[in-house]
Image 1 (spheres, rainbow, N blue to C red):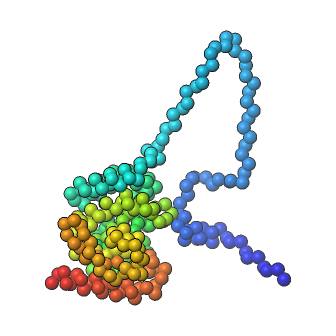
Image 2 (cartoon, rainbow, N blue to C red):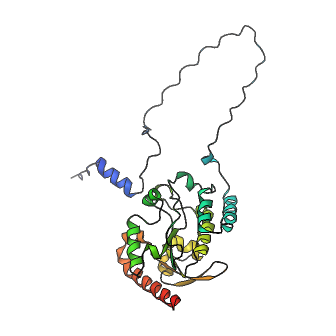
Image 3 (cartoon, helix red, strand yellow):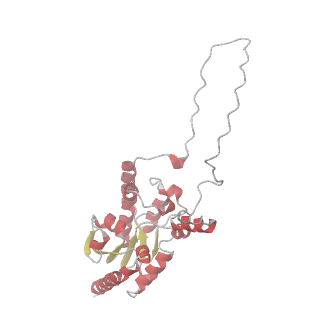
Length: 277
């Protein structure tokens, strides 16, 4: 007996699937029917003989206008520019202004807003994730969606809130469709978050998830091996205690790891108490 074919998904089910996959915006206003045959080009009109033929010269080739957003900069040049710009920022306000005017990262052209930071710049603990998501891109603040609500509960577990913590991301612009940032994009943005950490100068630095841990703590090991371990983060002028834990978005998908995260949070609270003694 042949198997019964599965019913075709409804439009609502398809939209829910695409939204879950991160496809939440259209690239063009009108849908494109790629199965439609293109219209045939009209036949060229017969050439009329010229009364006084002259020398034929080819018309000059038109110079295409290139939008600023499509002007590419070599990754090495963009990284060097980012390093030099970040080094010159004397304050967090100046660093934010530099990022607003920085054109070396293509993610800026597709993002809605710059997602710089949230919380208290004088906080003793700083949390750093990977990149903004859809909600963060809309509001211009890090960790404001579902993962942000979980991060708030994590911060509350050590007796703090956003007014006593500082929150940022390695990448300050949302990648299209929530895709993973490329290594080049990470390297271009890295000098800015490094300068941000130096200016905040926390007692404890917490990296959330594997990408931010590998980028900031110079390790190639996975988060399962690095979480809960203490590192020394060197700003050039001071060594900051750093620890990695799971990203809240990962905990939403894998809640069984919340117990490990609770152990990490207890270690963070103990370190803050020791630094305050």
